Image (cartoon, rainbow, N blue to C red; front, side, top):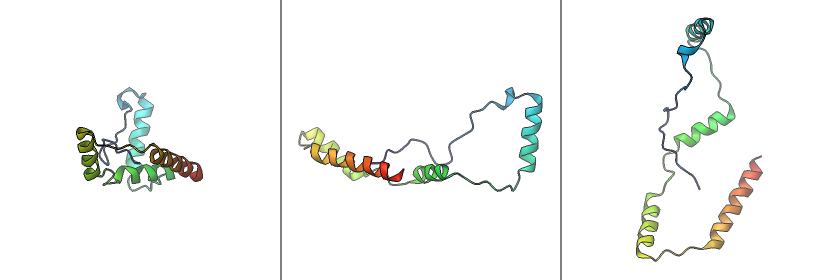
Length: 99
């Protein structure tokens, strides 16, 4: 089961306050920005994985959500605890296998 986040791709920003850096820090940051033009950047495997997750388009099956919403409203939703438990166990096994 995937949980969709509410931020758009590319919406992450740096939260540090550059105005509070010491004068030497400002000069270093300015120098790094000027000399870094065209510099290669390599993302970690975790960053690449997060980028893939953030870029996933169809994480939510809207038709299925509407079916469940209707069944809830009509009182006809049948919950199968065995299926839920099996799904949780499968997810946990998948997580353990990745480590």
